[in-house]
Structure formats: structure tokens, C-alpha cells
Length: 399
Image (tube, rainbow, N blue to C red):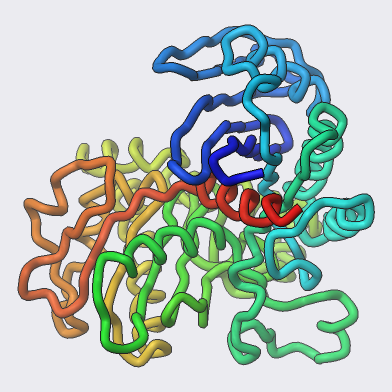
């Protein structure tokens, strides 16, 4: 086996599956697809290959049926998986808990452990388990590898990963800051480091900004802090997630509003963030409403920027200075207004964005800081699927 053989990357969610067939060595994408609204009315499937996109409806009721549909898409539209000598299947798994600090070949025992970690990620890990089980049935003759969102942060310094709660309780229930979006943070930080020749350790802050948002402080390729914690709820303002709130809010809402634990969990995960502040969770619509002088949208934008600056300043202090700030994700890559607002007023920290560079759209990594900026500010498109494919290939090639 070689890394010139393709890897099938599968990202199974509770109601959707994304997949991509990639040659890791060249980053060539042979096929890309999504199956949306699994088990719901109006399900849609899209399969792109050879520059053409094939779309249609589907009636897949569960993840197993969705995996069958994926094989049908390849059989109908290509490429023919049977003719490609598939190297392996890589699976995105959100939570690796304390058990998985690196990509791991999936065995029955590994799968059982991932299933056991569902208590830490009840919205994500069960779907990943279902996707793995279905994929192992469909592609049982090649290795399957789990790549964990939390793995990049598995070795956070103890001072950064520890909550100030009784140690025995934390150990018994596996409570610590885990961090998420690790595959993306690792990938874009690596791309950014390749753009400079540094005499010493490179100090980076990465902002992964999409419907889910997180920040990381990275010292010479190793994370030293991150904004998400035990769950993906902590940290920055997100599409429907609140990010940081006073922990006392939970008991306050129980006493004053009669909300139970599940009600508060739903409120903070699905009804807060941009949706709670502005009524919509699409950042593009927030920007449009802000341009139309909508007060709630303007406030939502300002709260997002305020929180980003809060983390940027804190991580600057933790790193003891800064060499690069990197924006990625759907919002980070496509919102010059947000990037400019975050950098505004931070000349004292060495940050200055060039307006023309910042406003220029491009599909590749690019520098947007001013020539006299002591800190390089970059936009680096993330490619988690490519990162997963390469990590999968490196592990599978050892067989």
C-alpha cells in the first residue's frame, strides 16, 4: 500500500453524512459528496466528481442506508471504488476523551471505547459509531482509522486542561478541557508555519470560525490553550451556542425560569449564540442586517468581536508574544469585516491589517497584514478532510 492510493473520508453526523475520496499524496479530490436530512422528509444527496455535480432526493432512514447510498453514488457516477485499490477509510470522530491522543486503527475494542465516550459527546459520538459500523460492513477489506477532533489537544499543559473542581470528582468522571476542531487548528497552523522561516519557536493564535467557533494558542506546533472545554459549548460565540457564560446561570434559570437541566442545555446549545442575539445563526445574514442598521445584528457582531479580542489578548499573554494570527473556517475565511474588526485597535500588540489585502478574496492561504505589522495575520482555508486522509494513510500504510 502507498499514499498514492485513495482514502475515503467519512464524517457522519446525526442527520447527515459528508464524504470525500482523496489521494493523500497529491491532495487530489476524486469525489466529494453529502447526504443531508437522513431519516427526514426531503432528503438530498449530492455527489461531485470529474467537475460534474449529481444531485437528487433520497429516502435513507438511517446511517446504514446512507452508507449504502454512498456506494450507489460511486457505482453510478464514479469513480469505481473496485478499480481504485482503496487504501483505507478515515472517520472523523468528535470526542476521543482521555483514551485517544492520536489517530487510531479501529478494532472492535476501539469502537466500544468510542461508544463509551458518548456521554461526553451525546450529539456526535453515537453518529460516528453508527457511521463506522456501517462503513466497516461496506468496506470490510481495508483498514478503518478514527481521527479525533480532540486529539490535537490531548497533551495540553496540565495547567490549561484542569478545571478548579475536586480532583477525585474530575478523575472519576473524566472532566477536563479537551478542546475541539483540533484537526483544523493543527492543519492551518502547519500551513502558516511553512510560510515563514523562524529562528525560534513560532507563536500562533488560530481562529476556527464557522457555525462552531474555537480559538487555540499554539507554540511551535504544540497547543498550549484552547477555548472549547469539556464540551464544544465553552468559549467563543457561535451560530447557536452561547460560548462562555457564568456557570451560575444554570441554577439561576432553574430557580427563576423553571428550566430543568435538559432545558438549559438546549437553550445554550441550540437557541443561543447568534441565533439568540440576532434571531438568525447565519453570519452572512447577521452582516446584511448589520449593514441595514439592525441593532440586534450590530450587537451580535460586536459581541462576537469582543469575545475574539478577549481570547486573542489572553493567548498573547500566555504565549509571551505573537508571530502569527490565523483565520479559518467559513466565517474566518470569508468575512473581511470581522477580521478587520478583530485587528482594529490592536496596534499596541503589533497587529495591523492591510485593507486591500484583507478585502481580496482568494481560495489559497494568503497574508492580509500590513507591511509594518509585527504580527503576520493570515487567512488559511482549512481542509480537515485532507488532514484526515493523510493521517489515515500514514497509519494504514504501516499494515
